[in-house]
Length: 103
Image 1: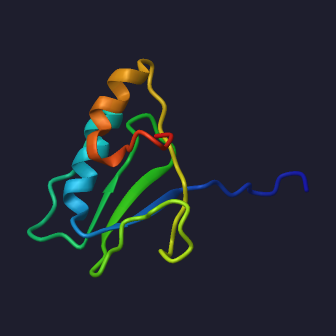
Image 2: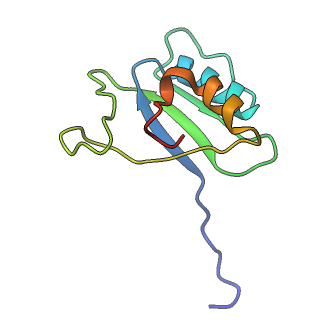
């Protein structure tokens, strides 16, 4: 339909027990600014400096880390980031990247 507004994918939200810590991790990894959370933040959002899809982090009590691909653990959505230097990239991801998975 000519002239119709085209929706865009604006953000993705990730559950985690400590949203501020995960926001700092991804902010450093992606070199995006991370706002200072207010106290014990329930929700932190980071936005790419050049625009695009934001990443939101929200507190999730009772969070169960994914055990991909285990259907017993809910809300699994594989995702990935790719860097210029694969060995350095995997080293930076540390505990979030197991040797048997693509990160």
